[in-house]
Amino acid sequence: MQKAIKIHSKDNVAVALQPLKQGEVISLGGQDVTLVEDIEQGHKFALADLPENTNIIKYGTVIGHTTKEVRTGAHVHVENIKTNLGDVLEYTYTPETFEQPAAQGRTFKGFVRKNGDVGIRNEIWIIPTVGCVNNIVQTVERQAQSLIKGSIDGIHAFTHPYGCSQMGGDQENTRRILADLIVHPNAGGVLVLGLGCENSNIAVLKPYIGEYDPERVRFVVAQAEEDEVAACMKQIEELVEIVSKDERTECPASKLKIGLKCGGSDGLSGITANPVVGRFSDLLVADGGTTILAEVPEMFGAETQLMNRAVNEEVFHKTVDLINNFKEYFTANHQTIYENPSPGNKAGGISTLEDKSNGCVQKSGSAVISDVLEYGDRLKTNGLNLLSTPGNDLVAATGEAAAGCQMVLFTTGRGTPFATAVPTIKIATNSRLANAKKNWIDLNAGRAIEDSSIEAVGEELYDLVIETANGKKCRSEEAGYHDIAIFKQGVTL
Image (cartoon, rainbow, N blue to C red; front, side, top):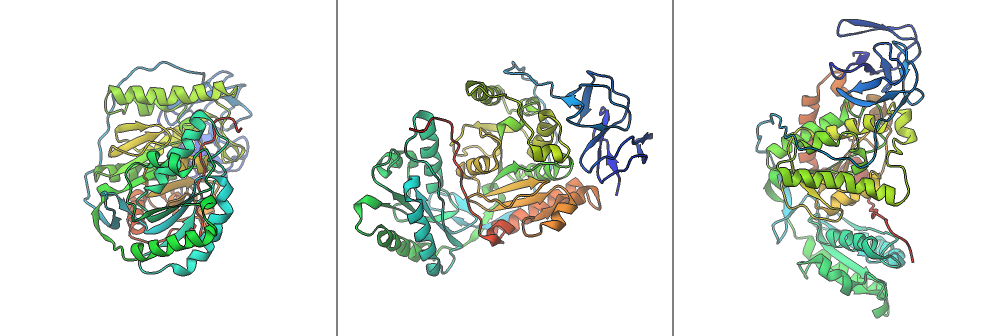
């Protein structure tokens, strides 16, 4: 295995692929660099003497500038570099396209719903309209487990603390996300439980849902029932009889909608796991499928890469608005736009937001951007989409699921056990994590720089996605992890 990598020919830093010791001589592209200090895996070191205020180049792009002189072979990190990023910017559309892989014509076996959508799971979901009834839906979930039969994959309740005491757009977020989940194709049946007096009560929520199958979407108002648990169980029993008879049928990969997410990133995220997911995204898009890239704050500093891949000027302007509107959200709340990366990211070798963002957008591959979605929107265009969400793992992944994704691919260098409402596949950036947390990790992308390649592991990931779509449980499903988190933006009454 190589010891370090210079990602782009323009780079003036390299990244350690394994722990390196002071005094080691590292050969990169005909250049020998003697390390003047220890360098941890995923961390950067200078390939030349860098005077103060020199731009640091990684991925072939600027990721910050030096705050003091840095010697050749020295650690390049938060102690000696700083972001170059500013506030709201103006952008120019400079279209750029890349050669895409050929279609493979893959298929999977999914559950075709009455409206033509396809689920990869046949579950029954219990969704509360308001946090006041969380304990009730959890009680119903526990009692309903004994009813599972036939093709039913599970019965899950998705609790949340919202649905009342919210105002304006904040309340809209809750209503739209709940409505999106109620019609999600992974749910063969849904029970919606309301309290009765909440702001987002069932009568208010129904217009947000739109068309739905009344045979498979049931409603109970707790205040209108003598025994609300018994009323819920009656509806669940009826749903079980319907949903348990559903069968998987052959479907083209063009019916797959996959969320792309990263969290607990490290210095290898943009070198291994994220490019592997990007390769997968290009392969699925070539087959007519759909992927979503979310977490807008982690596009800051790499946004022009995405803007210039917009399919047309309309989508370009929507991408500009996506970026600048999110910056304005930060400033409206009197927060620093570039207060990122996290402590865990820094420990893993990421120094600035540009560093993080340029690694993050590798998950998008090189396909054109076909559409841009607001938070709570549902997918309507095949291909690569952008979705407005914060970087928070649970909130962003929930946004992708609510948009219609049947699965989320989650890359991580630090590790995390969480899962959203849909199967959440964990992809490790390094072999150490993959070996240490086998109960969390589904795929080891660290092999892309050890004994394989980005292209080969990308194909392997496509295989895993198809297997998971066919019913194979991922690690988080085996552990029974299912959560949602809604984007909280406004005041609480």
